[in-house]
Image (cartoon, rainbow, N blue to C red; front, top):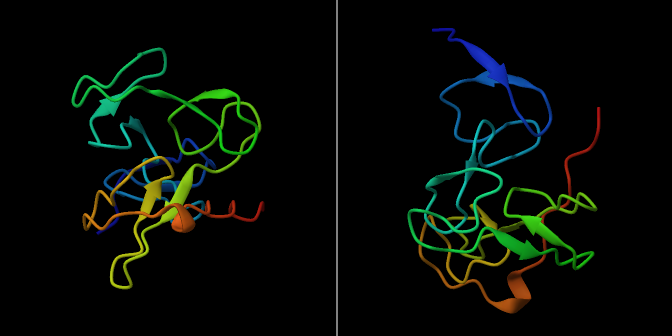
Length: 121
């Protein structure tokens, strides 16, 4: 059944409102910002997550500038997502997470290579 669609805030592709992931750019939160640790809804300008207390500003691994914990760096646009190393999971995770929020597997330093950005159309 076709549903209402709205644009992904990362790439602009129209997707179903109940989508948990953008099929075009792989954004794990295509409509709102979520805390990378507990997935509580957060907003730019907040200092910490109201759900878990995690700081919502991080140093970008590429340019080292402070950035909000969205899917990409505010300054250089570098991706902040890594894949879970577990062979049955491979869920996208925030690079600074110690454990996968989907399966709980520990993310080692060697597994923290960020996912390359989706090709531009």
